[in-house]
Image 1: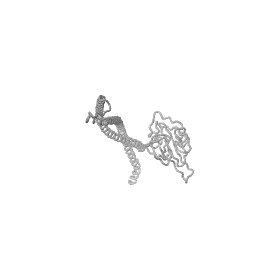
Image 2 (image 1 turned 45 degrees about the vertical axis):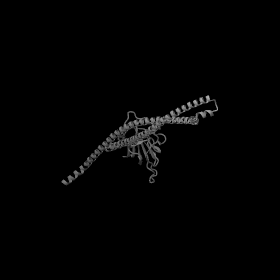
Image 3 (image 1 turned 90 degrees about the vertical axis):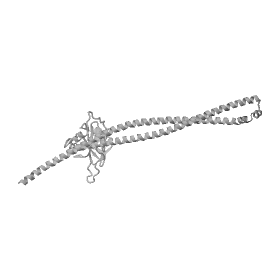
Image 4 (image 1 turned 90 degrees about the horizontal axis):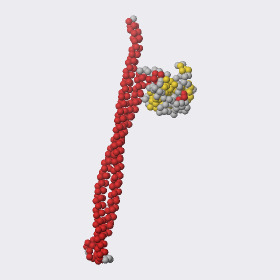
Length: 368
């Protein structure tokens, strides 16, 4: 008798113990996912702040590089001007040397035999003496000019050498600045990538926390828990969403069902048809859902969300950002054992958690 009583008590208490264990596991999972989401948010804030600081450093680096580039341009212009002046000076020196070369034989003869040179000149002696004086003056002036040009040329050569050295130094500084800016760009890209990864982690951990808390038992709770509300929902113009799948509507919003008025619309889809999102946004849930099959809940912004359910394959994951018309999954393919069976896509549109008729928004051609 005592053994039978003990067995009965064990059988009665076993489910309660199992339930308590499951509750503890769920609470532990909830704490873990909540902490992971909080850590990801904190890291996201830190990475965002780092990215902002790096961007400011990049602005300063770009300004420094621009200053170096301006100085390089000025030095290049100055070098070109000096080289042009050097060319002119060289031309002037060559002309002076050519003029002196013509006078040099006569001057040498006068120096060696002045009397004989004057006697051979076909002119009166006084004119010859005057011509020699003028020629000596011209020669002295040309020699003075040549000396000045030569001095100027030496100075220009020194200036050009200094300008070229400055250009070499500036080129090295500019290359170092460009390398530093490229490194900053790489760090900013890495920071943005980490920020996006943290955002994905936050979304995934939030969804897992909700699942651990058993708040995804109904579609109403799922949408209300996952999608933030807005004071004024966005205005969805008729025809801007586009049909999410190839097919036709087989059940309209508000139609009578066993569970009450339909809160969405249902499409009889083509076998294997691709399903696309009728709005841009973020995937808040992607996976199997009781009584709905594979389902996606997307936050379209402004307190507006869309539910796409009944797919056999998903192409997106929680936290992923979506573009309007982007493929998100596909319907069941053709089944030879049930050739008349048509896959059904359920579409629900909610604004601040309240289902609204999506027919006008989805009217028209496919979102893609």
